[in-house]
Length: 488
Image (cartoon, rainbow, N blue to C red; front, side):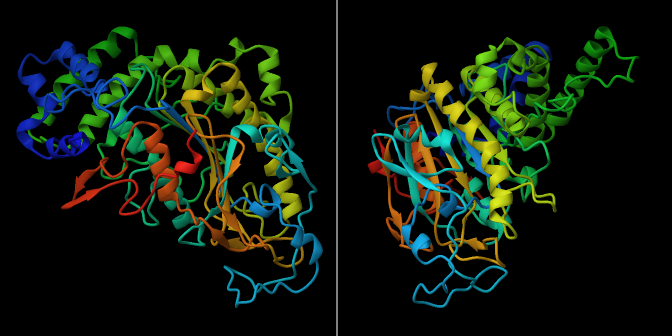
């Protein structure tokens, strides 16, 4: 099959193929810009190609239509959540000796440290799970665990970039941006790619984690803060701007359209203005659609309790998970939720150098009930079969102590998990060693995870490319294999 996305990238770099300039020169005005938006949403302006999405020319039949990514910022400890190791119980308090020199991020290896939480087996699959996550433990038969994940960096910023974009350096599009570029929108009144950050702040790298990189700027994530009095920044005039009336706003948009057309005519191929025009068009529609999508008063008391909105510790992440479900069922293609903020001390993320029981205790409880609720709610509404749920973190933590109570960074093994959207439940792919120190079976990188998600969306990860600086770039770089053992 011809690589349709390469054709789109090529057209964006040729001045005589600019779409919006053509529409303006052929009539312009609000009708022209509205038509451009509608056609662009359906990918019908790319050199006469058919729609490059689920309604058109995907590379193969798709099992999933949308993705929700739960990102645990700060490095969630695999050996305290999902990767049960009896040897840590047996050797607790003894010198950590995996048979090789151990180099850590900011400490010397301490003693072997068992998890502060107990472990039990759950589900028909018999998966061992920590008592820290009892709600997720009840969902194990719907989940595929990957305890053999590996990172190329043990530094938060680069490792977060790697999981979010496939590269350890800045400037590359996020996975959500690639999926937005490839598949477009299912709902013209809502963004294709939405980001729900932790209410306390950003993860390392901030909004670069959901940027569009060198893709057209319209494919960056749209940040929504459901816990804020103003969830979508700058969507409406500020309260002090009493001079803005519906009439003056309409007149202002008319002037802006004319100025944009004039500006664009001399800057063919500049995607920043295209993105801004698209943003303004979407903002107008969001004024009507966003309040309804974010209105949790429409949810039953049972559903609100399911997500933990009735408890302070779970309310914030639970609200984001419930908003994510509402966005997904309304056609948002990719939703990214963040748990953890890089905002100093006391820690409000998963980076538990000082006290794993204290810090993971709070983070785990705040995440467990809402994440499990999202899985259950999607399943009972018939949405899980077409929605991929990805839970990940930037790297893991060491099985030995840092100080007396904490754990240092571990890029050599960590756990991610997938559910729904064509993923086989109740399975485990790969393994770490007896310490949960290094992956030893079926080592898996973000490239393989990304390739698998794209495959389930009907996309061949090797064909989804964009020409940039003379290189056909892709989400998986030159790596990645679809993990077929995880496919249902």
